[in-house]
Length: 288
Image 1 (cartoon, rainbow, N blue to C red):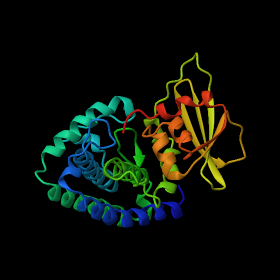
Image 2 (tube, rainbow, N blue to C red):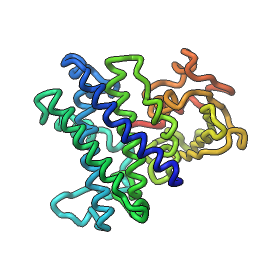
Image 3 (tube, rainbow, N blue to C red):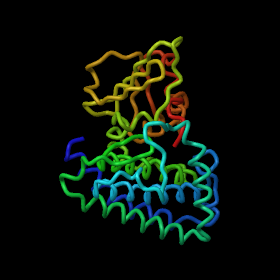
Image 4 (cartoon, helix red, strand yellow):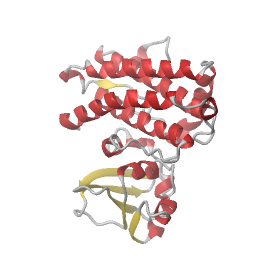
């Protein structure tokens, strides 16, 4: 990821954090206990999960800055990275979110804690020296870098904000300032092993072109259980199908929060090619 894009992500996250806090403060108690867009989480559960994530990410980048191996801490055992994905980790995350949610006895206490943790994490990124961004950083999915944890922060905060806020306001979109930056996350090869395909030896490989209305698009190739996502000039490769959609809509599609067929039916997405070749697209992401 180039420095310009890194700075852009950080700047927009700094702007997003207070905006999210203000939106959460406007929710009613009924909104807070409503079913979110995550299958078995309430709006409160989603925000409790995000709060925990932000705390962990600050630990990860502090450990990286100190050039420590976080796995050597016997008081805080963590899974070896590289063995987890969305499907295998989903149950654990669900239970942890519900437990975290119980620790907050009011809406205000959780929002205040989320605001504090988000700001501490952003301060951690804001104070990074140039040479520190590429230092190895732990994440349960894979060893990445501090820059990689910034991408995880972009993804977690953007998507879970939608999970919570769209549940109480269907007009709320994946943040339109951050959504165009999400391909940086989706294309990172150390990160996107989080995605799982359902392909087998019996199923042919599939290539999908994603046109987001810019010069570059995404090429998504699935083959024998593996997924490859690259940002390329949109007319530079062949594909089985091509979809035209917005960055906000694409974020919902690739994470399985909205079915591709439904998106095509309500004209949020236009398809060129045979849909049968790409019906598995919305099932590649099986956890959040």
